[in-house]
Length: 146
Image (cartoon, rainbow, N blue to C red):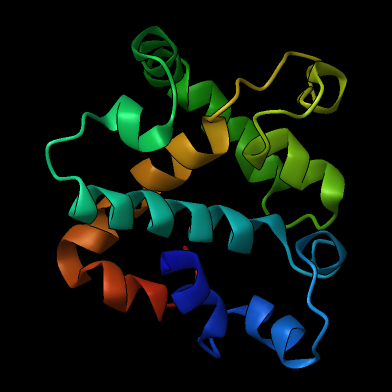
C-alpha cells in the first residue's frame, strides 16, 4: 500500500508511467531513476514498521539477523556504491539493489564486489529514518526523494 500511495502521487515519476496505462515495473525502470525505486522501498519498510511495531529491523527488511549485522557493518561502503547508481535508470541497477533473487553476476558493484541482498532496502530505510520521524510515513510518501 505504501508503494502504491507513493506511486500514485504526482511527485513520483512512477505516477506518470502509471498514467499512461499498461504499466509494468520493468519497462518503467528504463525511464525512472533508481533513486525513486530506492525511496519507495524505504517508505515501504517504514510503513511495515507501523503495522508491525514489535518486529526487529531484520524482520522488517526480510533478512537474517547475521545478514543485518553485516549490512550495518558495511553501511558506509554500501552508501558510497549506491550513490554511484542512484541517478541511473534500467533494470540492471534495480536488480543490483532491490531484487534479492537476482543472480550474483548482476549484483556486482563498480569494484566487482557482490552487493548483498537487502542492501537497497536497508540503505533506503536508514536514509529515510530522520524524514519519517519528522513528518511521518504518509507525508514521506508525498515528498520528493532524498
